[in-house]
Length: 172
Image 1 (cartoon, rainbow, N blue to C red):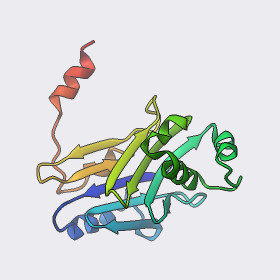
Image 2 (spheres, rainbow, N blue to C red; image 1 turned 90 degrees about the horizontal axis):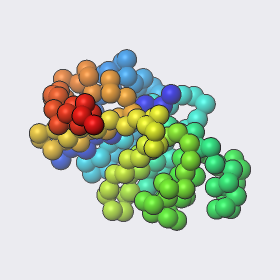
Image 3 (spheres, rainbow, N blue to C red; image 1 turned 120 degrees about the horizontal axis):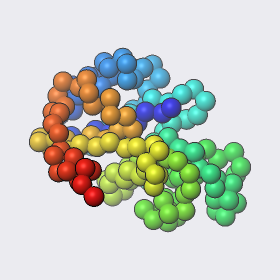
């Protein structure tokens, strides 16, 4: 399973990055790749069988996905059969923009950071099999992860219950 974590901070975030790396139960620093551009940090910790991050001149893709219509997409967009999932996603994003997601079938959580527009896109499958958790903190930090435990042990992360979401969940 791939763990994805993104941090967007307007101020100095080097201490936060160090603390993220210090969470041994979340990330193995020897197996972690990092991409920094202005105030965006993407950290992924993938298994050894697949590349968890793909970077082009236009975007960075981090994902945990099983694309069930992969062969069809590779054929329709004239891509090589050995194209990795993240490369396929980057290619679709480049050709179709953010609407590319309507073509993907399967279970997935995808993070795309567009280097040109400086936008961060997060997608999950319609059933939430591969969930995405996010939080916006009071100091304008934005956190996103495929596992909620990524937030749990960070001392600078302010934990509070979103009562509106609890109400929405409990009422029909």
